[in-house]
Image 1 (cartoon, rainbow, N blue to C red):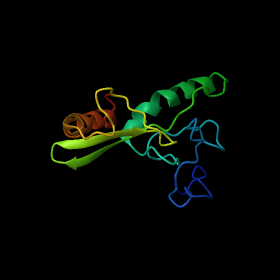
Image 2 (cartoon, helix red, strand yellow):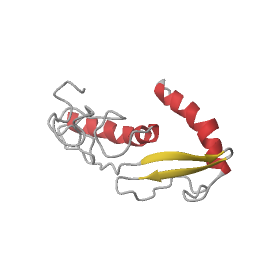
Image 3 (tube, one colour):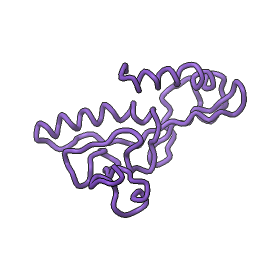
Length: 138
């Protein structure tokens, strides 16, 4: 993408060769039949597997709408997630949007409280889940 017409040509994302997408629709700003997903997108946040999982249904819906001759109807909020390891057996699971608003998806985990469960998630659940997504199983 970096050396193609699809990358940002100016601004903060140009040097990295990121895909020039609208952050709310993930649709390319100049090529309306192109959408981005994952860490190729030139957006302020969202270079995580959690962002891919959250944005994939939105991009799929937008593709269906564009093929049908309609404009994309959904808005992506920039959801991303960062498990922050504090020490052995303790982590924070921080989930937030483009505006840095906390957007917790698991009610049993307080994003501002260290947690053994968040640590177990990072080491025992997230890696296998990521590998399943990477292999196209999810």
